[in-house]
Length: 319
Image (cartoon, rainbow, N blue to C red):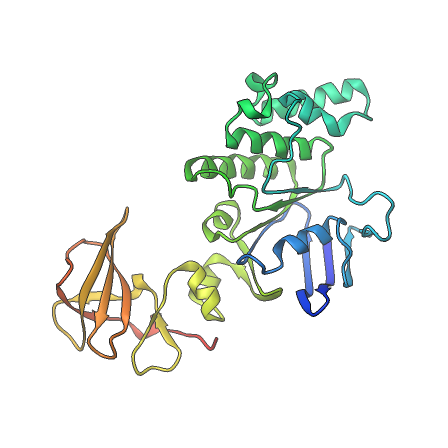
């Protein structure tokens, strides 16, 4: 059953269209990651969903209730829909406990104390409740910001690249913890990011946005194996153009290395990665440079190699 409904939402600035006719329906408790490069309209979309920006067209409904924009509502925004930004937006001279408590100042004292204590425990912040934001790590500050947003028990959480300032270890840990917590709460989540790996750590359900337009939607397996464009394909890995084949490409992992064959090249660069060596190979035919995985770490710079592939692995991409 549809819980959050976005109908033909659009946004234009003079001669620039930031978002084109965007529609989406999510069930209660569903997670969705929206992936796109900077300027693709991701943040604009979230601000309109939250009722914080006037749209050029379209409507947003939470259940049967219309989400009004700042031109329609005296105080923009809704407690039911909370937006988390890249910057933590914490009060620097307030403690962790005080920051989480701020959205609850109009609530009953007993409920406020119970809610803050519960969030401190859920986010593992009990031992930090008396610290100021500057005394916390980046991951802890982001936890406080998310706990603050969840204080009023919103039904929808919108995440606008909130992990971009964190290092890889902090990021992985926080996304895992947040995923488990939000699933338990039954919160509906839309996460926007330019980083596909971050998106996949939170959910397998993806929507790809490019220049304000939806280019593909589905699960990671479908998008990886059946991309509709070069842009979508390249989000998952580099792709290699096959010589003398129109719009035909191969992923590095789908190329097999041999000591004899038809398609020949030389290794011109090598990078040691965790599970394999990544080779750059200059093909004799056309001088193309291919990126190819070498899982057994057999080849070195200067080696002659022959490249093989199965036809079912070829991606035919029109744009």
